[in-house]
Every structure is written in C-alpha cells, then in structure tokens.
Amino acid sequence: MIDYKNVAVLIPCRDEAETISQVVGGFKAVLPNAFIYVYDNCSTDDTQKIAKKAGAIVRNEDRKGKGNVVRRMFADVEADFYFLVDGDSTYDSTIAPQMLKCLIDENLDMLNIARLGEKDSYRSGHRLGNFLLTKTVKVIFGNGLNDMLSGYRIFTRRFVKTFPAKSNGFEIETELTVHSLEMKIPIGEYSAKYVDRPHGSVSKLSTYLDGLKILLMILRLFFLVKPIVSFSIVSAVLAVISIVIGWFQVILPLLVNGVIDKYPSVILSSSLMILSILIFVIGIVINSISNVRKEQFRFFYLRW
Image (cartoon, rainbow, N blue to C red):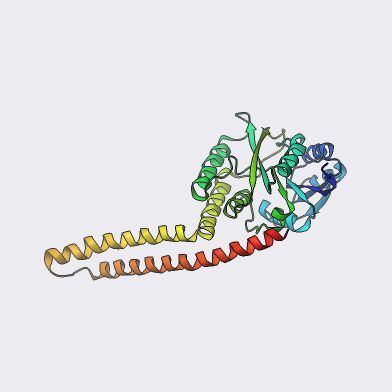
C-alpha cells in the first residue's frame, strides 16, 4: 500500500484566487495525507489567503517566472514523490492516485500527463505552438513526449533532487523533458482530460513571447547536450560559405584573368574557414566536458 505521507503536491501560481481553492481541495480529497504546497509568485490578489484557508502550506518565491518557482520548490520540499501541477484548475486531480501507482509499478522517475481537451479548451496558438515545439524536441533529441508543455507531472525524489534547473519561466517544461531524454531517465506519459480555465481565471502564458523563449531554450540545450552535432552544423555552414566565396570570388577570377583583384574576398573566405575550424574544435572540447557532466550526473542520480 502506498504511503501518501511521503507525497508532496507542488502548485506554482500567480494570481489564481479564482481557482486555487478548487485545486487544493481536489488533491486533498484524493490524497488526504499528502502535503500540499502552494508557492506564490508575486500575486496581487488573495491567492495566498485562499490557499491557506483551503489547507495548503503557502510559501513565496519573489523572482518572477515559473522556472524560478519550480527550482525553489524542488530545493525546499522533502518527499518521496512529487506532483507538479498548475493552479488554474485545468487538470484532473482525481487521476493522481493512478499516476502514483503507474510511476511505482513501471519504475519510472517522471510521468507526464498528455492533455486530452476539447477543441476550445486552450487557445489555437498554444495548441499549434505546443505541437511544433514538441516535434522539434523529438527531431533533435529523439523520442520524447506527445505533450511536452503539459503542466501536470509526477516525479520521484531522485529526479527532483538531481534536476539541474536553469530556466526562469515557462521553458521549465522543455528543460524537464530534454533533461530526461538526454540523461536516459525512465519516463512515461499518461493521457487525461484537460478543461478550460474557469471564468475569471487568466492565463499567464504569452503565445508568442513565451513560445520564442521555449524555442531559444531548445536551441540552448541543443548546443549544451549535443555539442558535436550542433557545432559541426555551424562549422559546416561556415565552411561551405567560405568555399563558395573562395571559388566564385577568388579562384574563378584567377583562372580567367590570371590575377586576384578581390583581396577582401580572399580575406573573408580565409577568415570564415579558420572560424569554421575553430568552432569545430570548440565543439570537440565542449563534448568532452559534456561527457564528464553526464558521468557526474549519473553518479549523483544513482546515489538517491
């Protein structure tokens, strides 16, 4: 039998006075002995007061951004299993026991909830962005999740305590996914219903700005965890440009006219080739550092 006293429910939120009581109450009903933490992120409404009244342990994180809140929660809270869920009442709390059972039975370290919502349950821009960004991660990092940006997951203690959180905002879901894929951590996905926000509750996610931040995070992680591939691509592009410039601006004029009269092109072509070689060498060096990092992570991961 699962000891729910070893379970923590982590709810990052900002200005969720309309929904936080329902979220806390839902998890208290299905996980009666779990510790429910609400981490308030600079709310200007009564989120904290309502969360306390609903029975949650309320704490603060003054640095704005979901990534900052998740980093603080993972560092502060001690438990064996951690639920991470948004405070907007769009996720189904009743499946929490099944999620926990699935995580334990399948010996996973992270279980993600793939959202099954009606057509209008979240904005079309969010839906399209999620699809494109999820596909991008699958192409770059291999098989991933079907709903990478879901805000509902469960983790083991060793995942939480060895996760090197770097992001500040909504990029945190991308970082969680890429980290688990690159480090070959056992993860799974479970589908569940997703509903629209209740009337009066407003999403903090900006479709275009946060989408751009997530894309930049994917590129950043690409260069960080796959340096040989990423730096080789940049190196190859610069080498091709150098060869094209050298051929059409230097070699062909030399063959036709017998003289080189475009010395700036010679300098540019040579500089690009040198830069290409340097970038490739940098990629090799960073790859060696990345391998050491992975070995260190594996060591600490297995200690938990």
